[in-house]
Length: 277
Length: 309
Image (cartoon, rainbow over all chains, first blue to last red; front, side, top):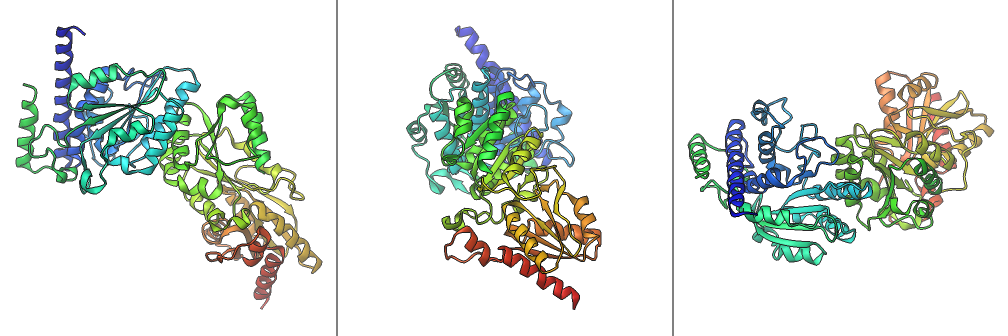
């Protein structure tokens, strides 16, 4: 990519990621719900996926790439991306967690742009493997991208799929691990130490890409360079920071759950808006 | 029933390219006919039932109709949450073949005895639940239901050589099938144990008790109207199932009886407690749980006697 084009792409993704973060802060405050840190953690990954990588994202075209947010508790980041794609309207996004809305804490497949309801960890990768297998059986080119959390790798069912996908060489299945080192009640290192996470996936037969999950260029280049038509399935182990973009949330376990007070909301919004500079 | 299902599936798959068969590493001498006829549509996912359900959900969401094969305990319980959050929640055509309900895996022990699969399946809205009584009905049930939109749990027996007299392979989703007429007592039986119920009916007839025997092979949708009408004609209904008495056919009939306000008394024959740790064959375990022909007829006579007092 030309230097000028690269800068434009980086700029575009930074703007998208900033807009996603702003929506996360605004809507979680409006709804007075948590999981803010988890959503901020994946904002850059989702921005790059929806901006650059997913083919026909948000459409109902049968050849669209499927995106499965297996860590469904980051749904607000996905709603924001779908809004920026024009799939969800602003007034819809503003119904987040309102009674009677389809936009809950976890994604609901009856909502436009969402193929699978998720929220129970350890399930999404198998859904993606089924989608990838279906594409292969039908001779179609679509792919499945599954975003899992690092703590989700505590689930045995995830590793069942990891083995299956490697055995069947599901190259059209891409897993992205949001490796922020945190889970609901503590640091992953202290709860169930996953280290060395990339080596674990590699030992199971996946091609592993250890990257910075907040670096748009690295994310974009890695995704663009994936061989998804043959060979082993790919996993991006993306190092991230929970609460990324809001200084008082970064790396703090409590922001897995806490909603924002008025004062902290104002500070968070200021910091997120400034991140565009 | 297992071979009858495999054969039916292999045939349907010839004209319907959406049909796939997945197994969690079970089905030796059972699945070969499908696997050989359709090798690219047969997958052994390994000993990983939860994953099998997840994969099947992704396949079904992409236009396929996957059938999943395992022993009923593993098929119904290991991936239960994946069944709920997958094909049920998304209303997708995943078909779960749970093999060998009740005590059919005899000496294999309690880990292989599905005694609650129908109960946990029956509470899920949108999950069709089918338990054929013999191989002819199993084949008919597969053919009648494989193309439904939503998910299905089939409890499939192991016997291939037994034909339930009078059933003649009839199966209609949401209907009961009466195979013996009688006016003294209503017996409602489900699954392979219907073979013992038939023997019980013959034995009762020799003692002058005329029993109506109806086969319930569709638990959801339940043949509620058929059952309601039958209950209104009898003073006593006895349910027979190789399953815990809670949650399965007996519960279904008791619910319908209570809601319809009938005066018919319902007596449930089934497994009432965690089975003994002592191992035994199917006949032995049925006998120990009051589910032999003798046990069933004894329950009927005892209940009739109580009604007469």
